[in-house]
Length: 633
Image 1: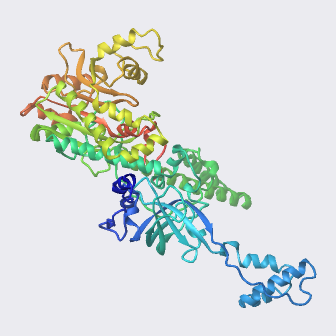
Image 2: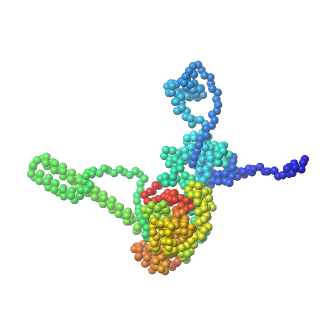
């Protein structure tokens, strides 16, 4: 053997490609099925699970049907004059079917035995879909943005029942390599269907593909079935988890604050009033038709005066013993007038009762000892907890009745609220900055698949924006500095001219973070007229210790402040704004009994979801939006 051959033989041989390990698939703990993410989210796409028997469930996202090749059959001999003309072809077809499917003889007899239309009638009895086929379904159970391909033979279930978008199936079968080349690494060959939830395509709103988000709001109970909305909900869940993780890691205590309150917690916004009401799911009773429609504007007193006059006339006719027909007519007229008076009196009582009931609802229906409202903020009650527990936070729904059309406003919004005992304005600003950096980094790492999907469908800058927010140092400026910067702008014209004392608009905030500083900005020391009554007054007596965190894409996301701990200043502020002192006596007690310096902030959670998902309308960032003019479910 030559040396060359010897060297070649001694070279290491390439090893064969590794075979995916047979790792048992994880079962859902509380269901007899496997979550799809445990199959499709694996690094090998699920190849390591080949030949495993599983049960999966989900909803059909898309589908197609693949016909099987028909089995060739031997043509029977043609008899006699069966092929004279086109009609003869039909007869031959019938004979073939009759020879193989004896039950068709009965059907043809029912049709009258006439062969002229037999072919058309047979096609009705034996539709084309009766041909053997395979339904290829892409299903999702909400656990992953990637769907699983499931094949179902028509002998198990008809394609027409399985293929409509939205159909729910629970299938048992074996995982295998796809029978056709495609993007899927594995598919499930169904051997048994344990459940089928059929869909009425004519009424199911998601039957049409690619509905815009605005249209999906009209069917909020179905829209989580779309991959886009499902991804948004998962990012929302991730931000929720990140929020609790941050505060729990930093020693904050989570407390629940009341949703129903007797205090107008912000002192300047429109609020919802709470009252009791009986509600029935039964169909309302039809009102009886109102008679004498032309009497709506007649006064009851006028009718009563008319009764007196007509009664006198009847008495006069009786005494005069005149025309009996005239007397009968007068008596009939008096009777009608009495009926009208009775009806008007009943109407008056009904209106009075209805008015009294309405007034009770508007003021006090007796359930609470005084008026009750849906809370606009839990910060006042949170201060009570901070005065005993230290650093606390709350997370829940808050309500405002303002009829705003802003894309960042909802009547029912979710808020994160914090209060830090023994802290001042600078402490709260630092905590707010750390919080935003933490949740941005957390959601980028733990919700990557959903964010990546949304970056392709909604906004390609999502991940870059989150990573930037997590690493950059925020700019801190006073309100006065912000006004000075905006007044020096010469290459841009703002729709609203800025001057000291006016609130900054969205275009002002956008210019500061996107064009001037090109980073998140914290603006503090605002004019006292722009902030709630309980914010601490600064030494200049014109500004208060409040701050706003402005970030790219969404603008003002966090608003915070140091609270006024001085009793005399807080009492003066309540009087200046004309607030009812009796509603705030309990709040003032916190300043009388062991007061403490404290500060905090609140985060509009729904707007934070907008920032993380790239959406433009907050109504698309919540499961069931409530806003002025609309409430669906």
